[in-house]
Length: 403
Image (tube, rainbow, N blue to C red; front, side, top):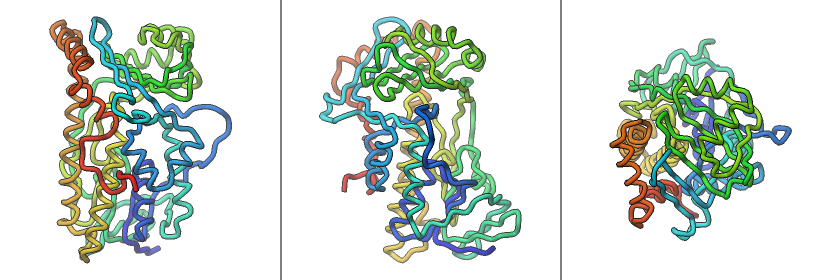
């Protein structure tokens, strides 16, 4: 098979599907490589243990792609407050949507809901071709075309190939874009729990020596939790009986919402950070986790990926208007300059939070308690925290603006 299009996107997860839909709606011919089409519906009332905390900017991007309504129909939970506190002492800070005149601070949405809603729209786009079960063995640039050679000798070509295939990106590896990686020496325990006293429409986050515990509200009485801790404790929590796990989790949360009871499965995954040295080459661009992976403590990962996709879309539209090749290095560098600095700044901030809060140092304990206390009472500092939660403080691409 020999197939040609304007853009080839490798990876049809949340960020790749967002990119494919955005490009198709702008009239580009898109080939989307993803092993299989995800399920658009599922039975039962269970929860996906993988969730994302979407900022209001991400919400706007998804609204402008006409997928937000579908997400709300499936399940998307707005939260109006955020409460952050230390494991002991007087340090705490509370944010409320009403303080900034917003209806909410963001939404907690299951990853499967985001993917299904995007793919529901993708299936209605005549200029998106889904190619399944293709194993790429090489990527070559010839003239103004980038060619993907498959293991069965099929050749796919396009002006631009976009790697949206996650932290272990085959696109990044095949074209030789280097990335630095390191471990946080933590694992994230994830599951859904029911709260005895409901969730108060609040995202709660407590910092402890081994890592933060995030309680992300789902519906009125559930939370999706992300408990970042040592690998040893993570495995212990996953293997513990439900009774023991519930007790440890309730104690760790200081019972801010009463007893917490696990619902369904538990899992743990290693936490690592990744930073691609460059996002682009002639005819190739990386977005989302293929370019950067950050600590999940603030739930910013997928939001950065959506901003990548939306900013790259702006760059490609501008290039087309000026009759430039969308795969030209000069064009793609504009995307890299627009996004790399912000991604690195957020990654550094998350690393700083992780090192400040996840330790037993008494001096740092005093500093962070004082810092949280000051942030709670000083409006400008509170506003900075709120800007992060809302997805503000960054150049907003066209898709991130209300139409």
